[in-house]
Length: 158
Image (cartoon, rainbow, N blue to C red; front, side, top):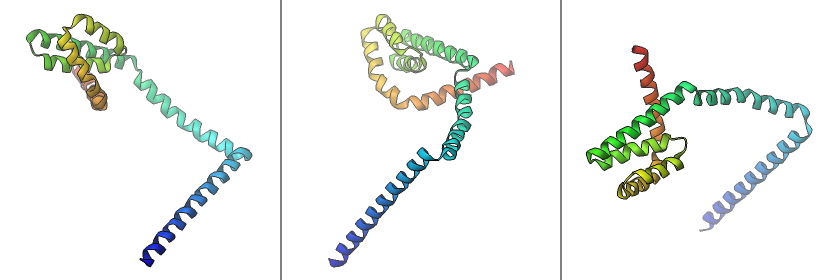
């Protein structure tokens, strides 16, 4: 019993000492950042060195050729969804429409369009799928990226 108390007290003292050391280091860095012009310059240089990577990623993300392929994917998913709904396969049609909703640039307007054009039961099914889209969106984005890469390969072979 006594050894447990000593162990807990020792652990608490170590935690408090670690917290004080961390706080002291934070204060030291803050003072150095505020007063040392060379340190500020080196921080600024490090930030600027990291910016081109971010800008390159943004340029790749908004590449016009990629945007066109994404639009093709969107139209294909909408067409496949409509085709499946006409065939009487609402589950598969909803899957395609949710994929289109995921890659759409203006999902509110697309939902309003679906509300006007789809039967109420099908639109309700689509609304029930929206929370699932949010959970699976990263997986679907990876699928879309793979689709675009495969599309690149197909167009290069032709």
